Structure formats: C-alpha cells, structure tokens
Image 1 (tube, protein in one colour):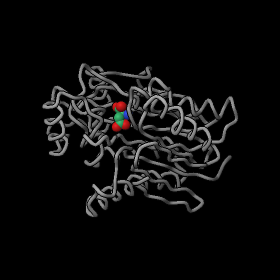
Image 2 (cartoon, rainbow, N blue to C red):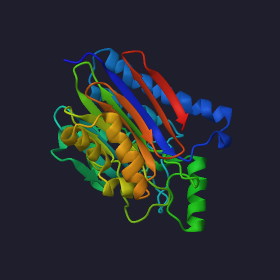
Image 3 (cartoon, rainbow, N blue to C red):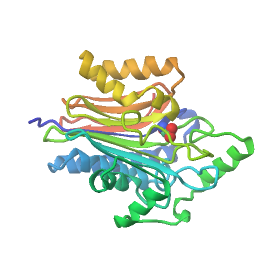
Image 4 (cartoon, helix red, strand yellow):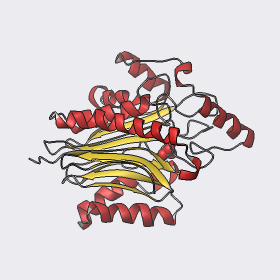
Length: 307
Ligand code: ASP
C-alpha cells in the first residue's frame, strides 16, 4: 500500500502569454485552479478515492466559467453547447464517457454514472442526456452555459467560417484531473466543450479512452488537452502508459517523448497532466502555456500558467 498521494489538474493549454494577460484575469484563473485543486486534494487527504478526487476537481473546473467545460463551454455551429467528458478508474480499468451532451450541469458526473450504472462505456447526444435525466443529474437550460466571451468567439468564428480551438489565439480550455490516492489507486478525468463552431457532431479526444483520458494502476493516469484530432490519432494517453509498461520508461521520459517529440512531429499542439503509481507528477506541454496545478502529500504545491 502506497501512502504517498497527490493530484494534478489542468484548465487547457495553448498560446497563453503574459503579454495578453491582465493581473485581474490571472488572479481569477489562479483562483479557479486553486479551488479545484483543493476540492480534489481534501478528498485524498481524508483517505478518499482517486476517483472521487478527480471527479470533484473536474466538477469544480466545470463550474468555473473561464474554462471551456460545463459553464463557459464554447458554442457549436448550431449555437449550442455540446460537451464531452470521461472518467477512468485505474484500479479496475472501468471507464465512462459522454459525448455531444447538452443541458447537463456537470458532464463529469454523468460520465461517472455511465461507468457505474449504464453497462456501457460511452453514451452520445440525446441518449446520453436521457440517461443523465434518468440518473437524476442536475440539468440546466442553454442560458446557464452562456458566457459573453464564448458568444463573441462563436460569432467571429462563424463570420470567418472556421472551426476554432477555444480561442482565436489557439488556447485550449479543456479541463482535467489525475490523482493517486492513499490506497495506491489511480484515476483520470477530462471534460470539454470541444471546439468553437464545431460541426456535424464533431467529438474530440477528451472522452475517448486511451486518447485524451486513461488510467491504469500498473502505470499512470493521464488527462490531455490540445488538438483533439491529433491526440486521437496518436492515442496519446495510452501511448504514455504503454511506454512505461512495455519499455520501462519513467513517467517523465514517456511524457517528453510523446508531447515534445511524437506530437510535435505531426503538429499536435497541446499538453497533458500525468501522475504515476509512485506519485510522480508531470505537467507537460508543447504550447506556450498550460493552466495547471498540482499538490502532493510530500509538500509539493504549484499553480502555474506560463511555459
Ligand atoms: N482536446 C479538446 C478537443 O479537441 C480541445 C481542448 O483541449 O481544448 O475537443
């Protein structure tokens, strides 16, 4: 039984520069990260499960309007919020995911319910929404998800006829959490609104187990953010787990190889957070910055934004 425990979270990677940030905005982002970090860490500290910790941290990030998940999710081409989320239990390799889901206040709670109560791994669209209702999940009307900033982004994207990664300046606002608990169990979760002005039911990597989200007690837990299509094609999260499992790489070496070499070669901008079975934490990205934070039982505590 491992006693070391810890959590890492992210609020998206991309072109995040000091020059375009105001002190007030930076403070708000740091507050949002701190709240989520502590929501997850307090569960781990009390002896709770990694699964509960990542769910609580992601739900907190979903409720924070500056990140592209839950409240504050980007607009799709039809003016809706079509959200994706996943959660995975590293102990049992059970996983749950929803994609293209609307009206649900916290997609991460639905993903967990899919894992535990649906008999399936992934539910989509209207069916996922009906399932959420059947599970008594909190639902909201479209107004709840509206934020002026996202609306303006969508209007601009429609005018330019482009599909955008969160912001025109290539900032990915997806959120995620990974954790190791006192029992030695790992878990990962990711939640996103996807791309501004996305069409035709486009789904990214976040809810795809092995691409944007993965956890396995034998190796590590991973949550990604970035250009979803390239993260799916690179099977990023599972690739890192496999590099540790099959080749004996350290978490750091596996993350460096995938994020700073393999992804870069195919234009896969973004990053990820990872924690391994020994409690090592990596927050790796190939973009200018990534909203990220981590805290562990050995006193490590970081809240960072820039590269
Ligand atoms: N990976 C997400 C997606 O492609 C986008 C993001 O990270 O913001 O849906």
